[in-house]
Image 1 (cartoon, rainbow, N blue to C red):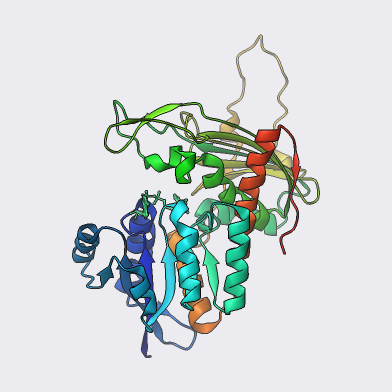
Image 2: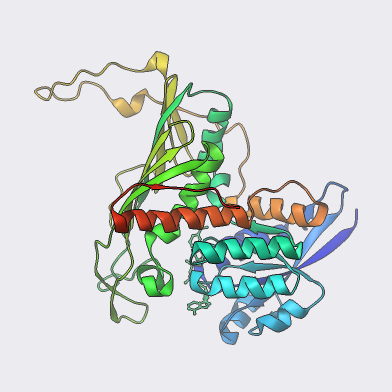
Length: 382
Ligand SMILES: NC(=O)c1ccc[n+]([C@@H]2O[C@H](COP(=O)([O-])OP(=O)(O)OC[C@H]3O[C@@H](n4cnc5c(N)ncnc54)[C@H](O)[C@@H]3O)[C@@H](O)[C@H]2O)c1
């Protein structure tokens, strides 16, 4: 059993996602377990090069975790021959430029979503990456969450019969930043800085719908900026120019209708921050990040509409919990492992820059639908 190292440049590790999910929960966790076991018995050990704009912050993170390699010079990091993978978790607006540099340098690419700010850029990246012969992957973390894995298990096992509809509810109250600090970065609320809930969340909804239920054929969306003024990290008021809520309807191949509300201006009266209810002829399910509950056709109650009487049944109690039947690791780490195996031993991997571009396409067409007040067809990318 040999130890094989793999050099990975991590750009954006001072950010929320880059630090917590990708560095700490994924790559450092892999190092702590002695590396990733490969099919031939070797262990793949990530050697990390932290890249960012602020040397002091990088040094502080590196020292906190016993790392020694960091730089503010991306080009020099990409020129190092032992670096095989470039990973990007920067703000969205900085991504395309950096991915282009990494592709030119011949590195494999793994990146947060959205892959670019517009479809043309996202498609161009996918084409360039293919032409360069590098391997590429895009974070699609929701697919690796226990709740959605159980939902996919139900679909694959034929639980639903014919699937009719999907209702998704995502969101929570993001504080404005005046009397309580906002829990998300301010760039998310400025469209000129790559913000907006459609650009942020529609790429997620695209892969969730496509991978679990089938291709998305049309989109109809209404977007709003419910909270027009917010306060940034330094306490200064700014105009929220980006959408903070999106109400979308998506038609899938085969006629399944998905309707997903996404909002940073809603208070949670749900069990989890995102939940999808799927209704089928044989049964229904409600899946969140971790849990999944089902109701079979045979145990479906027969409510009768009568507003004169108080509800006679505890509807929530009539659902059954889907058992884990498995051990679930952190979703980001699970996908990192798949990508690393793809690079190191050519294991199967499908969540690439083309899948990322289809997510960007859904966001772009969703915004077009909202602007024009109409349903928009989604054409296949080539
Ligand atoms: N997969 C997911 O569930 C998920 C969740 C949230 C965010 N994201 C994506 O991850 C990316 C980062 O989001 P985040 O919430 O971690 O953001 P963040 O603001 O916390 O971090 C942004 C990172 O980009 C760096 N950066 C580089 N150039 C910058 C510039 N000009 N201005 C500001 N920061 C700059 C920052 O230093 C920081 O390291 C976004 O593209 C976002 O869409 C993904």
